[in-house]
Figure 1 (cartoon, rainbow over the protein chains, first blue to last red):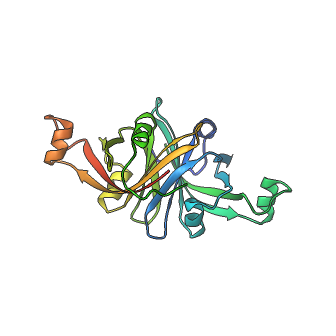
Figure 2 (cartoon, rainbow over the protein chains, first blue to last red):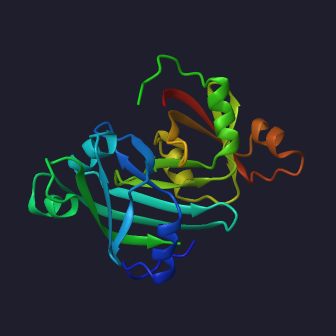
Length: 121
Length: 121
């Protein structure tokens, strides 16, 4: 596993995100890990990921409390995986959430934008 | 997502682990999440998971330092996922590791046994 100097996803890594299910890990108030698939996770641009969700699940609570976000996409046959660590910003009832969700936004789903700080492949 | 009272995987959940790639999340010394696929993760018995690895990667360091282990297996088409939280015990250069690895064990790969404390589906 090599650590890349930059914090920008390559074109190949962005394509990999499009075609594989992403998993998001966060840390809860007790310092324990939490992990789950995020089907709506996508590449917003080379240095940001984004997902949206209707339910305020564990990840939401943890990110809201300041947990970093760790995201991985992996391919079993290829033995390839791309890992990202970043800081999450949660948008709910704001202009950005309304823009993403369209005019029928009622603050739900909320939108999480992850600013990439580290990429490993 | 319902929280199950017990800490034992049902037969269906055990089968689900057999047929899907598991992801393991841990917490590092800075309190940040780390996540990656674990291809060797398997059900040892209804209340224990096990994986083995040749490289002492992030997860190894974190579990060694006392991080809980969070494991998820998910199915995109089915929208099913099984999550487990547990405590990890790392075996290296001991009788159990030798038994798992066979007579050519040189303390590598190490074997991680996760005692299940919580199951969500």
